[in-house]
Amino acid sequence: MFTLYWEYMAGSIVAQATLEALDADYRMQYVDMGAGEHISADFLHLNPAGRIPALGLPDGTTIGETGAIVTLLGELHPTNPITPQPGEPDRGAFLFWLNVMTTAGYLTATRVGHPERFARDDSAIAQVKAQADNDYAAFFGLMDKAIAGDVFFLDRGLTALDFYVTMLSEWVGGREVLLKDLPRLHHLCAAVHETPEYRAALSTHKLPTLDATG
Image (cartoon, rainbow, N blue to C red):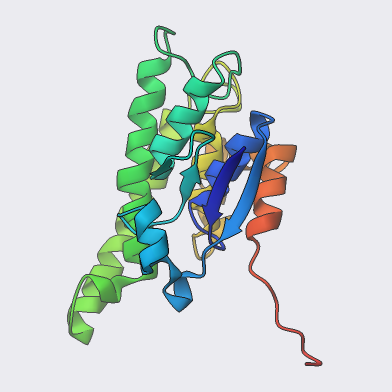
């Protein structure tokens, strides 16, 4: 059994959707990052990088980083088409775009959501946020142009890339406005939202609402 260490609206969305697509046997272990559990001694023993997601493997080891998790899961389930395998013609494109999403996409999302982590005074923070917003829009424009399939990112059909780029779009303020001007990406995200694998992951990761009567 795999163990997925997760937090709400984090990169663990992609990892869970991939586990679902592989019909893998897994359990969920919540890590409260707001309470600092990701930098606790116990968690750092599992993932020294102190980041979410992390995946506990059946052999007792743990790996982190969404791109690494997705790639390894695919190799452990070589008959499933959710990730191209070594030697398949679209393996290179898969790895290339997965790394673009994990670097240009995910890291830009961090600057958009938390510009205060990249500057110290209010003026500099505002500049970081403005540039990050521009960079994020450019990233999604690139994604729209890079889609190679009729619906999904690769010609083969649904892959973990589709889970990843759709997850990134969830973090955009004014998401519908953005996607309106990117018709291919809009179509892809809509199709991914209809898959049972992504729906299961998004349902898990949906932020809890406070009970107004409590």
